[in-house]
Image (cartoon, rainbow, N blue to C red):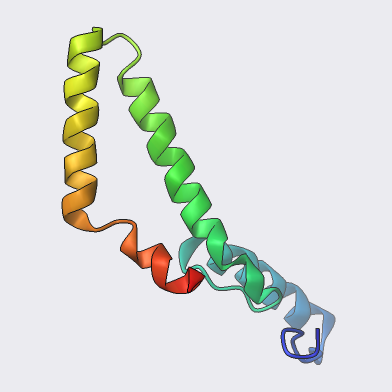
Length: 91
């Protein structure tokens, strides 16, 4: 607790501004001034939106086309090394 707690702010307005900035950076840069353990929130948002958009786009596709598109997306993800960015944080 002592290593992750921030220092006290001088004013209430400054504390509120830091809190709002912390909420913003949690989702945009995967860092949080108040709770450093929430670095994964950006990855959850990105993964859930990707899954939602893929399922939405494949909703009316035929099964053979759906398999082809999913295979293409898997190959593209493999080529872009998307899993490696998260891997170094877990070790």
